[in-house]
Image (cartoon, rainbow, N blue to C red; front, side, top):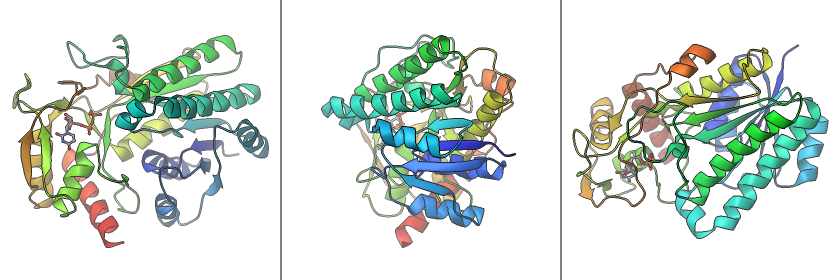
Length: 339
Ligand code: UDP
């Protein structure tokens, strides 16, 4: 019998890609989402890609009863938790909104899971590492104090899962620390749909290329890096989604070596802001109007993953070439602009 996986926040950017990969790997997937930061565009795309709809519940994970009822209606073997607010700037101006939503929803999910022996996969972030001295980072690197309430909720949720897995018999969990997820599904039917002005680099690049934004600001060219711009580890969203399938397989296959495990999910390759823009232009043949702007407060100079633990233990590695990822983001942007 196939295993059933709950994807909380599965109507969003990463959740919808994970839903596709899990379904294609033979899992029954239930998506639950309160649609607070997205509409049904990606779920409709998921239906087209799979050729059938996935079970969808519109609900809020901050409501204990709604979560308990959901877990009573299905027998979940695992839950992947994406349902969270993610705007760093907004988390600084509205910290309580972020602490309440991101922590309450996760506590409810962990509580419901521990009562029923459901494994928990948490979507964490490389933001927990902060500024590092000697990239690449391994999972052994210390976490730094978070620089935003958003980042703090990622650290706190990791701790909630770690402590709960240590305390409650039968509860196990994995945290995946994503580096910089980018790109879209090769079908161009699902992708990132930022609301308003994008904060992240690639959506700003594609919107500038599409003429929605006048000019991309490159935040700082005087960093101590080869071309002066910041270095990041851009991970393709489909590769990232596949890491979740591997992690679920590890949790449900009884392969975990402790009740709580952490894996970096990145390519292991640093790419500068200028390199990303140039590669986008080469991959798509479209020029991106840009200018050098002052540094953005809070940006770290350089961070990229050492993904060897994921390679060894999850049997996963990033495979999609950057040019393909960038082309997919452009195809998705054109699809969205036409809609
Ligand atoms: N960046 C930029 N212009 C933008 C958005 C981002 O130059 O409009 C740079 C940013 O300074 C950072 C890199 O792109 O060096 C990645 O930024 P993003 O916000 O996508 O991810 P994060 O800061 O979380 O790594």
